[in-house]
Length: 473
Image (cartoon, rainbow, N blue to C red; front, side, top):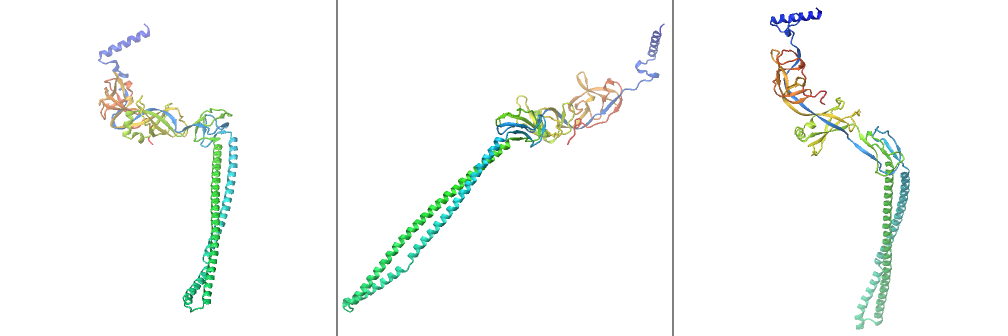
């Protein structure tokens, strides 16, 4: 008989002996003792207020993006960056041939100098005209003074007084002469004196009248001279204003020429990454016609994602968008080091999807996040008060139903159907099926069978408030 056959017969004998004693093979262990129940990780069902987070696929977009175009025409003289490199604000990117614009500046400077000389000449004419006006006004004043002086002379008054005395004498002698009381010779002499006085008075009066006419003529000439001098002064002042306008125009032309010259040097408007060069050196460029390159800012950077309109309205009511920071997970699964802030929501809903765009902003000092790239934004959605939470590892499918193993006071496990709610990090909110304080299996589920006993090993509890690696700022 072979050794294998002998061993088989011995085992059969042992089994028969055991059955006869009422023991099952599973109950027997080394030395006849029953094996201990399997050890499993357990946790107590707890109740707490938890924060529910949602994940959204986000696209990174630059805060600033600009197409670099030339503001003047000319030949592309030089390029001062490497394609795809970072450029600093104010850094020279392109140089357009400046020679034509430098020539324009020289021409504008010459025009300005000529206009300024014209102002000086016109101002000289103003000074001359002002002098002529002063001289004419002095002559006018003198002529008017002479007229007043002639009119104020006493010669006419004296001659008139002599005439008046002679007439009184004649009137006194006339009745006496008629009565024969005065000799005729005496009366005739009085009449002669009166006639002489009248003649002298008339002569003085005629002379004064002639002088007045002459002086008035001098005044008229002087007034005409003043008027002409003032007209010349106004013309000279107008010439100065015209010359100054030419200076202003020449200055504007010079400023324009200098501005156009500055446009030949194209600088980066902000710090960021510049794309590929679209035109080669030596290309003749038309003003504003071609895009030389595209510049995108890099720090900070936007993350745009879409949410349903209903969800947006709920978040808006609770001011949840602006109240909490945003987490970010990269496409390789790594959690981004910095949290983001809410920026805005688009003011329109996409009618085809019923969603609208939310924008968050993340600091990007290492330039790890690139425009056009994608990530997963984590946002706090709402809070559930007095929620029953359990680890995801405790849940298993039992005939397509979500279930957990509940450990009784005698360490016997029984499956129980549960209704799950929100997922919070690596835990679930339980809507129905469990009570606070019950013990459930959270590890080693493969060792458990319904109705079997286990050796419970409590695990350390952790908060369900935040998702893994997510911290508030």
